[in-house]
Amino acid sequence: MSAQTAAPTDAAPMDHRHVMRALSGLLIVLFVAMISSTVVSVALPQIIGSLNGTQSQYTWVVTAMLLASTASTPIWGKLADLFSKKLLLQISIGIFVVASVACGFAQSTEQLIAFRAVQGLGMGALQVLVQVIIAAMISPKERGRYNGYLGGVMAVATVGGPLLGGFITDTSWLGWRWCFFIAVPFTLVAFVMLTRTLHLAEVRRPDVKVDYLGAALIAAGVSLLLLWVTFVGNDFGWLSWQTVVMVGASVAILGAAVAVEARVKEPVVPLHVVRRRDPALAIVASLAVGMAMFGGAVFLGQYFQIGRGYSPTEAGLLTIPLMAGVLVSSTVAGRLVSRTGKVKPYIIAGVVVLTLGFLGLSTIDHETSLVIVSLGMLAVGIGVGMSMQNLVLVLQNTVPLSELGAASGAITFFRSLGGTIGVSVLGAVLANQVATKIADGLAKAGIDPGAPASSGSTLNVAAMPPQIQEIVRAAYGDATGHIFLISAGIAVVGVIASLFLTSTKLRDSVDL
Image 1 (cartoon, rainbow, N blue to C red):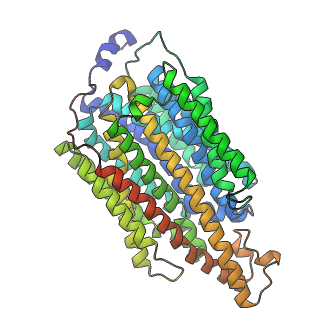
Image 2 (image 1 turned 180 degrees about the vertical axis):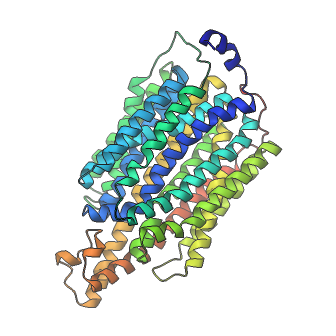
Image 3 (image 1 turned 90 degrees about the horizontal axis):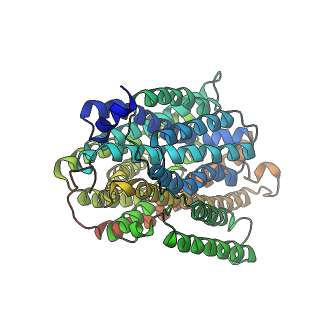
């Protein structure tokens, strides 16, 4: 069928069969974006250990990806309103594939961090473009039904990712580099499927203006702020000239970005959307959920492997309660939202359960029963599954189709921003706690803390003497509870924001 004859059909709402055909490719893309994080998460202690990296570099491997993803997300979201969504998706798949291969060939932690930043550009694009395209095809009320599929795929990626990552890392003829290579064939399959099945009506807008200045200011301001969050407390003090310069410059740049966004015709982050009550509250709640979820979950693999001494495969198996919670709750909540048209009760219940889960995890140390740890992870998973995607739905329900890309990009941006800040802050707290506990442990054992093998600066625990290994493992196991307590406090902000959301029914039409 030619483009001329297909356009009128594509402009109309797609029936279930056509939606499912296009959705299959989109779900593979989302699966790949998700699994590229979860596969690496459980293997990361081994990766950084084999490259002789430090705790700071462990955090940076995650932060670099989230930083690039966060800074570019609103740009991709806005571009989706202005240009071909399908073409943008194909470009982002290309970026992601090249970066994944480069990560697999990295020879040092510095190279890995750089390649992960490029991978973050592609990952941020994939996540927001999939949401934008689905929102353009399906009405908000029906979207709850398809969000169940989304939640299921995300859960399979999150459940299967750590297991796959552990298996790959523990298999001698594969090794951790295949944690990056494994995403490539899936991505190429998705590229072919979407090229054949995704047919969206592209509305040409002759008055298109891309806000390059606003995009550059947002990226620069956020990047500088996150660099400060990462280094403060380790490389320089909280009250230092570096803090004054970096925070002052970041505030000034972001202030200039707000001024630019307020006056340009096509802003990257539309302030009139962000200023509305429900979108603002949904963004605040997403920020809190992102900080708590990303920040807490990143260090679970490290807790099981370094703090408890389990292998990567065992660590992957031990994270199943977290992923199972996401799988079940997102699928069930998605069906109930679609059936009732109401979303607020499920969001509130989700963030409350999320907070309780983190409170439970805040009590763990290196000897805590795995049953208690599993129950805490299950509660966190249930909370994330019920709240995260439904907060996007609240925002999408309040904006017209012409602003869907920018609005989706805005909430994904703020959620990723929360996750990046969460990882940086909690990583800094963990590093300081671990350093203190290792120093105390060495002092009690009568070991010189200045010796290279006893410094604890490297994550290559296997190369340490047995007595030092015990001290380091206990330090990591005991320090992890502190970061989950901070996560619980952050999640409370999400509870408060969710309580003030307006109780409205989701609309049936694709556009207002």
